[in-house]
Length: 109
Image (cartoon, rainbow, N blue to C red; front, side, top):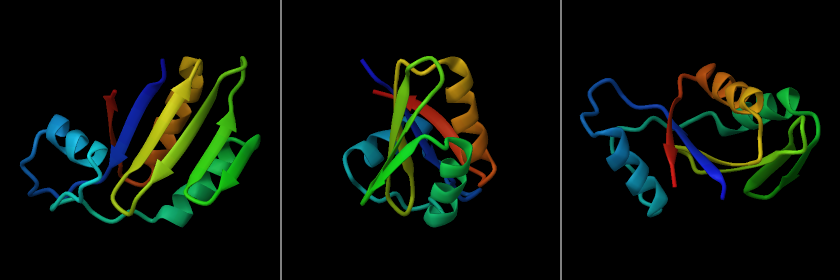
């Protein structure tokens, strides 16, 4: 089973719990109070961090050391990353890259 991480950047005045935001994103809804992300810049940064990648319209997939992988999809307000057998280092590197853009993370299924 994949480990799913959701990333977004919220305005300071957003009073919605992370679980509620994740639920709305998973349902395909926009969330008032989330800030639009610089999608192209994030994708470019992820590709630099994970050179073994495959980019397709609407998704970016990469291999990680140890035989794992991840696949990211996105909208203007979020990045959703599914990790498959990815070691802790790859997970942390993903979180660090998105943190550079002010994104918080929540684990979701």
